[in-house]
Image 1 (cartoon, rainbow, N blue to C red):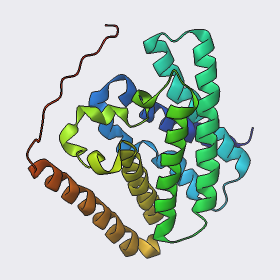
Image 2 (cartoon, rainbow, N blue to C red; image 1 turned 90 degrees about the vertical axis):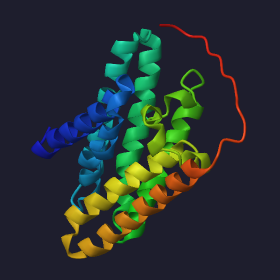
Image 3 (cartoon, helix red, strand yellow; image 1 turned 90 degrees about the horizontal axis):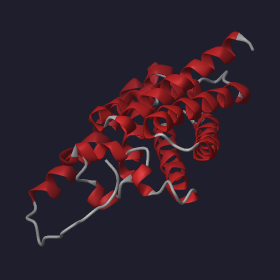
Image 4 (cartoon, rainbow, N blue to C red; image 1 turned 180 degrees about the vertical axis):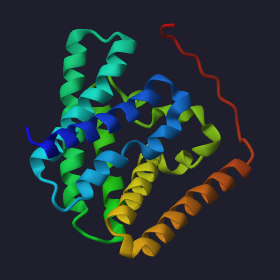
Length: 217
């Protein structure tokens, strides 16, 4: 394997671990704000090839799933199924993101964010025993005041926000000559979501619900 191939594996492993940590300890959910920068940077590079992008997706899927499988003591069969699923999802993400980044406009960041939302939806609908409780942005439930906007967008609105913002950051790094355009877009995006949070939190509760749950310690 060539040097670039090893770098791709490292990029993928870094993003995978950074995405996995909050799944184990929800308090670290903010790590997701930078977790995808390594693989998005790789995807945004013009010289990136599909083989190295696949390597990144492969290692990202493995390093995302294995820590969770170990901590949660998944059965071997379940671990294998989920490993294959995550390798597919993250490989698709890195490869398709590379194609989207070819358009050197702010819209590529929104397109990458939308792509991640779609792949996350596939994640919690394709495998029945996984479910929406295991969406990659589930850990943000530890910060309810920061995610009030999901009343409008649904849980995947978090995925769209954090991935779009990181895609804009990567654009700033790769295309510094267009920094003002990407920075202003990121500022507007954050302002929109903050405004939605403020509006939703200022409203009064209209009713009460009771929730019961059963599970394991």
